[in-house]
Amino acid sequence: MSESFDVHDAGSVTVGTVGEPGQRTFYLQVADASLTLTLKVEKQQVAVLTRALAELLSDLPAPGAIPPAAELAEPAEPAWAVGGMQLSYDHDLDRILVVAEELVDDDDPGAVARVRITREQAASLIQRGEELVEAGRPPCPWCGFPLDPAGHSCPRTNGHRPPTL
Image 1 (tube, helix red, strand yellow):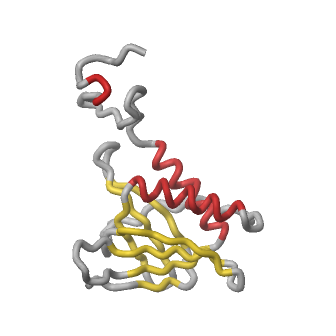
Image 2: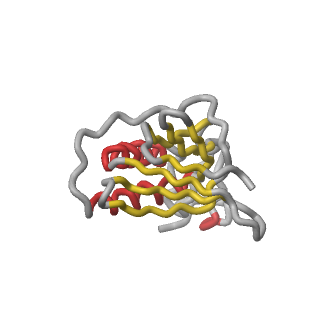
């Protein structure tokens, strides 16, 4: 089993990528005074995390000054890959709790990372995540799958020609 982490007061939190669109690897990275934790995530997980954080923030007092989005600290060596994530809000601490669970392929329990972030850090993470997701390959106008610079076989046309609309 991989190591679990509990970050009580994150100094920074960000998402980032390594590689070119279509070949990018996404990471969630958290740092505090003694640790820089990098976790591998999927593009869809970043998209869902940003939407969930935005929804959570809409029910909370407006954040203060939003810090600029941090860049991914290199080298981005992930501790493990994330399978699932959960969010909650601690009213007493005024912190958002992000719980990331390790992706495991057997019945053994995986590692867990519990990270507490401010509303301001969450707002910054939302902005950064949206930028990264939008910076990917554009979607095919007919099927919605990403267009590959090397070519695209659209399933709506059996890979032959654009469909007649």
